[in-house]
Length: 409
Image (cartoon, rainbow, N blue to C red):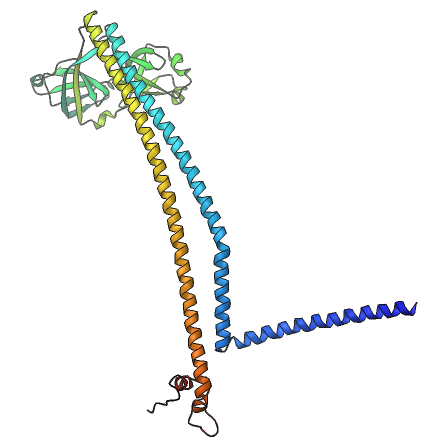
């Protein structure tokens, strides 16, 4: 090998060796320095405590500053999430409110139209007489189900009057005394009620079957069972003039009756729990085809206009509710911002107080060092002054702060 090349290789190797020694020395020095700091940390040295306080303060401030963006991002995310959640709930409530308002309006208009059509076909009944009675006796037997009420001919009760529990059909009066009457319930086997099954408009006759159910007769059972809905509603048809049409009676559960040979109606009311009932009679309204209908149509049109104006008022109220929600949301946002600013200011005040405490400690330490340099000889215990105090003790510190004035006990 060329001598010049050998010298170059030797020089590089020696340089790497020197660098390795420096790295080892720096690593060992760091380890020794760390061990010394850990050992000195167990003793109450002012310089180490002061440095520790400064390092902790720097760490606290740094952690607070670095957490500001993260906290801001979290708060922003929560606000946006809450906004979208509230907005979705608002849209759902808005659509439901609109749907209910439309249904109510449609129901009212359909009711008026139904009244007008019934009057035209001479099928509109008005209430002629009404009274309320208390149930006195409930006669129960396998074949006769009836109740005795505390109203009779004295109160205007007549045979054939319909008996209700709220709006639901219970039965009819079959016997009238002076102060009492007997009501045959529709659950009795001898009762016959002309009914209509809605919404398929299937007519038939219902007789009593059980305490809380009736049996349908004289209709094609397959027409009802083949209906694709789960339940059918049974109401009075008004045929025969005993009961007016449209009185709710019960429901037919199609799913549970498909395998049954009988079509059973489940009543809306439990007749064994009756306490008070309403007794009512109806009569057809005598109307003049020309004048009365015109007057009625005019009145109904006025009512429909009032309903339409109410719908407009609902729209205005809905707009006011939207504006109120926006104002409330804006106020909440501003309150949130003010609350966050208040928290930031409180944190700043805490930091300033901590810095103030550190400055007070530092001033006391500097003052002590100045006094120590002046009065250390008068307070420090040594060979010539054994009655003085050892450095670092409370007595020594009190002597320095009192400017070497020793209090005698």
